[in-house]
Length: 357
Image (cartoon, rainbow, N blue to C red):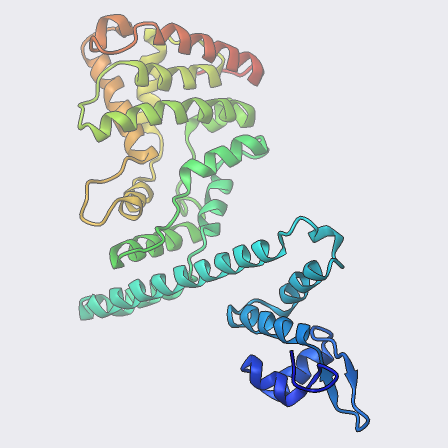
């Protein structure tokens, strides 16, 4: 309680007790956050004991840098004047939003720190070029240029869900706490993808011309599964070999082309994939970006594709295409080939009739 007969206090006293300035109390009062109990005969503001606790709450919320609009929502909820906040979540929502904002700021600071260390540690002859590269990247970095690159690379009118699934695999996410080499890798990726795909040379695979947009959706859904399986082999340093991963890889193409997986199709596919344009540098930079500094490279769709193509070549190099049950290690599931073939045939039917090559 305040010592006055009415149990009220003036603006100076409440400011002193709350640890804020008189100007701050006046601002909160004029903003409607801190109601006055009354005015004295001389027009001075008077506050009751509840106003002191309210002022202390406002000060605490502002010390956490919560915006005035969020402070108002929390007070309205406390007063029971915000029906939408009746569940008591205004404070939790405000804190969560502030944490997200601070996380973004910290990510930007960590990125800038790594970029500055990159410039500092660069050889004098490379410093200007690297400064130009990293200076073109926002902090925190945006993957939008990479996504635009792949959207232009994909067949037009590919289903939105299939496009989103493809981008999730093809567009690497920069680490939250990068080292200078990862900053440089992302800056080079961003610079690489700001221009047209392949420059003056074609860079789209033959499958886009043959399968079309719907067939490409079937193709990349199947390839994602095959790449996951191949990635597991890459992490174990296994040499390429015919098995479930290769069968899924071939069936993805067969389903997209509306044909069957046969020895002849595998030979044709091997030749066509060898002739397709490649974007090796993109996947090399992606591996640098997503791999732990100083650690072993993480598999990428590019390295998985190379592993699978090598497995196909190894199979064809030993004669006709060998069924999975004759060529896979004993640990492989010998029923996988028939299961994947069934899925591939269903996908081909769902994708529509496609011309094969």
